[in-house]
Length: 426
Image (cartoon, rainbow, N blue to C red):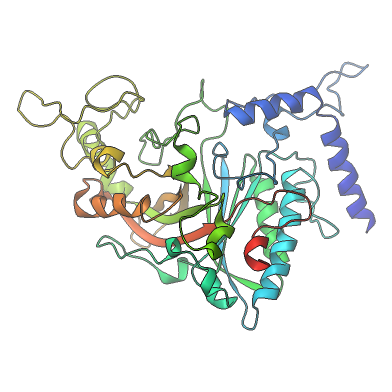
């Protein structure tokens, strides 16, 4: 271990060790999804100047556990910074190399999520920072099972998504053997994790694509609220809630089935559908407010349905206006995507917004890194997207440019276990 590494480790551990009650408060806030404070918990020293050894604010001290029943980053409150990336195993790499890589990655994820240095090669990017709600989530694409000679253990739920008429997918930014989602409430902490995992891939895997996203920072609004997307719309109102009795049934694969016994390694896991959706903001912003609201079916100001109430009020899809037409138009996005219009299909949406500069045509390359979670994508994402594909009023204002589907196994239950071990060593 080098002197610089020791300095990094001591500095971060000393900082984390001063969290005390502030850290406990941050953990409680993180667990309930509450707003996190921004003020540094420092006090004056004997001379009256700011203390140099103050503790972390709740925003920095909040830690998400690596071990558990489900991987972090699924039900974790959305973070302000995110990175999505997919990798392909290198030529010649197979099951043994994949297992060694997942073992390395899992130990690194555990350390980073705890606010510790990555190891002897830590770059110091996140020096002085706490965990900042860092989550690192790993998944496997359809092609991973062929590369590792595990095709017999590939679940049917991982079959490729069907083609949709509105798709304009770039294969270079789609799919991949391995998938990683990184989220944190600090940009340097998120990048530190990204850089570390990319380096640790070594000769075993190569990055296929990477996308960077963001959300509103915790504490930016007077009270916690549903996020807004780059169209200015409240986005995610209809998400299933962990308090609902059928939440786990909808989002996580059950311990017993469905499917053959060789697929039992996915028990407690979930399936992530990832879509890069470009928003045609120049066209959207030319629409008057009332027309934007009719496209969505909700008020822009507060996310309430056009039929009245608050954001959480159920839309009255049968209510007619003075003209005899539905108040929420037949092709409104909120109507078409409603679970009751799709046989109860539900998915947990957990996206990031993105902005990658200005395109050659002068329009912003911006939109949504859509990530949704479900126990079975053929019952969650697919039926809803099929219906949207046939007549969503929002379709002229968006473009699906990349896509991926990944099996995300349960979290390691204890120290020493790594993500995917039950698949790779079962």
